[in-house]
Amino acid sequence: MIAAGRVVGPGFLWLVAGVGLLVGGAAWAAGGGGPAAIGTIALLVAAAMARRPAVAAVFFGIASIGFLIVSASLGTWPVAVTGAVALGGVTNEMLLGHWYLVDPRLPRRPLRRLALAALTGIVLDTVLLASQVGWPWSVAEPGVGWAFLGLSMVSVVLVLAVWLALKEPAYSGVMAATGLSYLAVLTVIGAGVAGRWLVAEGLLAAGRLTWL
Image 1: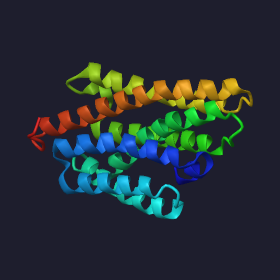
Image 2 (image 1 turned 90 degrees about the horizontal axis):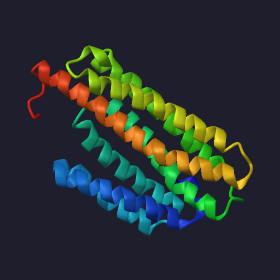
Image 3 (image 1 turned 120 degrees about the vertical axis):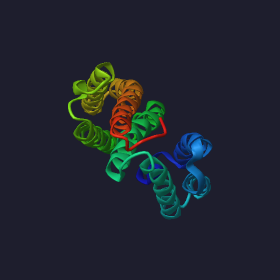
Image 4 (image 1 turned 180 degrees about the horizontal axis):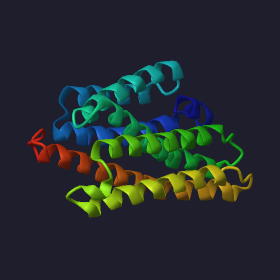
């Protein structure tokens, strides 16, 4: 992300920080407490230091750790990390793609790296969640299980399509990649919510979770 900020300028870091603040504010309001507050403040500092990439990177790292702690409180650390990589990758792909629509001559390496990160996160997140749930259709809510499986597969296809679209040197390649990343954001969110719902349902049935 910091590398992408060097390509397109501080405005991108401000945009990412703004999106993160919305998510962080929701986590804070939902009871994220100290970690969410630290992450939110760190995002503000990172955006303010956008012209100094090394300093901004440190505070983005602090923010990421804070939000990961909040996410991990609802599950395991590996699932928190894979979910963050999956959703963070496709979201940043979508946001960064708009800069390339304004100036298609920008190097596409940051976009390709984000697509690769998103694809890795989606695959690992799906595998980890499925390993905790068992086959999605073997639980009490088979509809949610099939939705999880279907949305995960569609997410993989969309991110692969983003990668292939970026190989098209014309302006239309970036345009297609940005549009596809919009859809990927929706499907990744859907898959993540459905998968985590199944895990929570399994824990509740086993008597290891009482807050649902």
